[in-house]
Image 1: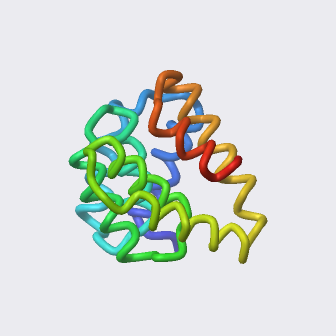
Image 2: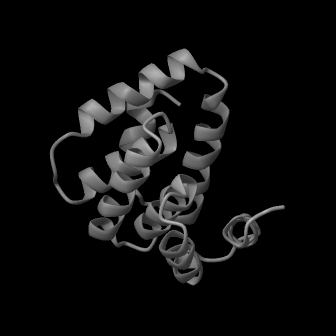
Length: 139
């Protein structure tokens, strides 16, 4: 049987995919991560929504938590890279190199990352940090 958090996660993710605005979903993902603090995908999504909502400091904390829970999630590392760029923090190059290694090892993840980057740029067309990361990853 699926947990309540998983059901809430799936519902919130579906709403996002259907075009709901990032700031409309923030509280859903805050609740998911509060009630299920080891839900790495919840933290990854929360960081993404915080970045889309121009909350890079919060995204930095969420992305770091997501990586602690799942170090092999390239989306979490991209989120961390974005938050580092947007807060003028160090460590971006290291994160990009790790993403490249993950993609080399598991190339089928490239499709998901390309879609994620395209989604981010469609929702926030002037997102310079994401455009830089896209260029660095050659996606």
